[in-house]
Length: 167
Image (cartoon, rainbow, N blue to C red):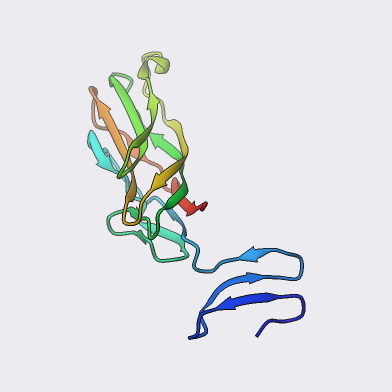
């Protein structure tokens, strides 16, 4: 069923696995890829899995918006990232961390409140991007950690967590 200048690979049942179009662009509709955005989360506890419960897309149904976890369907290298804003941080805290935790290791962004100069900032950006070595059935999620101060930090809606299989 290829059109002019196209090459399409399908299973015997007709499911398209890969398409190379006339300009050489390759699309793979079953390639694992997801993006989820956060819902409002207020007064985050010291150790919390962040709520990225609204899927923008989930190409291979590998992201669970109920427990905010991506499960690798196959062994490979995965690009994973999270970006966003924390709100109402407490300058009296010892530290804040936002990180991507996989079954094999964790990758954290550290926020040192010393830089707050004794104030409670309204917005503080975080960003973590990694290439993770994941085996089939390994998981990844985003965790918030903090110690000291008041549990008053909030997660801004529109923060996101996403990833895709590199190969």
